[in-house]
Image (cartoon, rainbow, N blue to C red; front, side, top):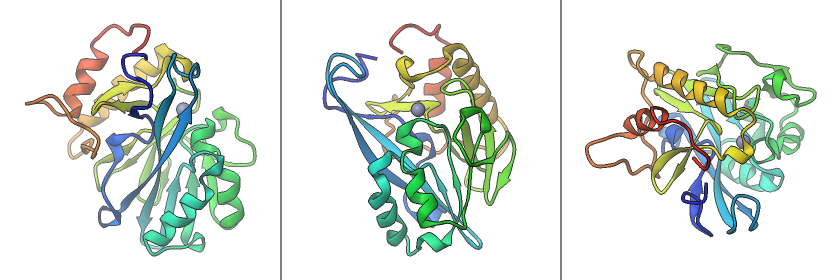
Length: 239
Ligand SMILES: [Zn+2]
């Protein structure tokens, strides 16, 4: 990852820009958080990762997708206030995968919203959650099994908005789509198959991966072109 993760530069990794829509007008509110990794964790230089959780509105409340790292509780509290909601409005807490930058503040969310259904794939081994499987529908979101980064990784498709919240299936570096770091990916081969299945999803009518604020595709191309180019290459170390 070293070409993608120079010291101190912002590298979007999670939730990633594929799913970013600005504000709740679109029904999806991105909660941006920063995760600072010391030198040695992801290459020789310190790296700042852009971690995202999402609030997704529906007719009777809000779904929280991912919770960020364990210190993210106040950021989640603030995000709910920002969109005029409170924890009592949270109907579900959905976890894309069990990594600590995505499920770290799950305890805070469960305490703050005890009535909300907390859900994840049982294959990721988070204790005490309701099981969530491929194609399950929660409010406006459909769970999409997207294993590889972790065995039970789930993405969430907002069909009405054509937005796909991809967890750590994909990241963004310097405005382009990238793979999640190999160091943090459980099965690189399966993760690669997942990228192909996400692309197949894109080809369905009315399904789009909306460009995010951090994506800067090459001239004449879009982020889907980025994805096509990326998965048509043989995966190599560091990408
Ligand atoms: Zn992860």
